[in-house]
Length: 377
Ligand code: V47
Image 1: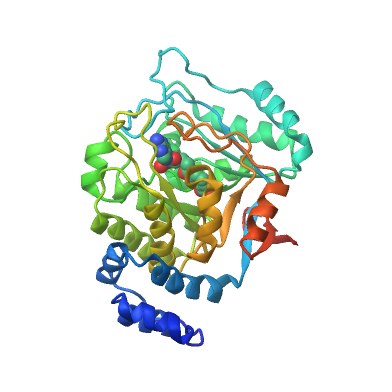
Image 2: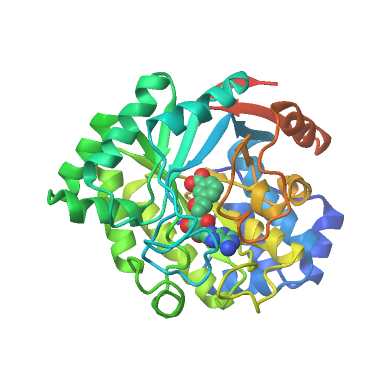
């Protein structure tokens, strides 16, 4: 695949550095908008010259988004932590019957919105565990409660794993289940639950959850039903570099078919309190590389998000020169990765987001969930 973008030339001294780092042939492809191969992707991951990698990723970043850096005013609500899937990387879940399990109802959701009234939130991002006690009506009631409380808000909710569970319990077709969710207020879906779209990793880490093929098939149906989604990849555990690239290529192929993905978000694994607590988790170099390689491989994705909750605000800021054009948003109440040892804040103010983006020399742009521009700062 070749894009129609005008060829880009890096300044001479940067070109020389890219040549010296052995990435000259990949630079030629990126400059001309030619699609990179899986082998190119592996070489990019193996490269240690992070500045050359960043220079290449920045070509695509600026070609697609100039120096705009997107954020939104969002609130996370994890409606239940009860889950029967026992994924080895998860510290958030409680088994059915285990102490500490919770399910939120309309009263708790209303309290949550009231607490953050001053933030003028435009999006609520809701996900939860696979709680076998919840009937399908719980999910539609949850959506209707939010819409009753905040009719103007965009509801981004339910990963493919949750939707697969709903299709099972609703006893309706996938299309009818999704139509019922849309009718109750669902606006789009987040990208969690994919983890690494490779059978080996699925078998080893999350075998009770839907696997790569089911995730892709359902994602396709969700896109065909008119819902936009995002895509993620959980990295820094047992996956290999070729497996990361396999994941990215599968997403790229699906995006060629449906065009339904808005953003790609690499998720940095946090090992604490998980079954994988003996692993060290990724380093900062790996965090930046995942952003840059994703930007270069996913030529048909408009946006790459540096999720500050997992990468830290400081590294997310740096990554704005390594391929990222989005830093998520205020978030306000993250729990999934904080249960796994994240030391980042659980929320940021808009003022902090603006400062972070401006000090990187980029232009902050407030967006809604589907990337309509609300304000250029
Ligand atoms: O699917 C679970 C991951 C995901 C851990 O769509 C962990 O815009 C790190 O999907 N360490 C949920 N990660 C979060 C998610 C997300 C986040 C931000 C934006 C969007 C979006 C989506 O969190 C899960 C899983 O992949 N996760 N445990 C852990 N210990």
